Length: 68
Image (tube, rainbow, N blue to C red):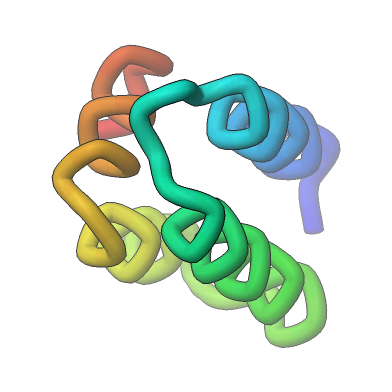
């Protein structure tokens, strides 16, 4: 996994964790997807699309970060 992708993942995790709009379940599901991606090293676009499908709120966080 590239250093760039690792940095993006850390930023995503931090912003999801700090979000007051996401439920604990949405945060947990997001973290599970991130950990799965670490393990499987999916294509970045596929990963971002799957993560965005968890909740419109997660999608908004990714958009705010400029990732979608």
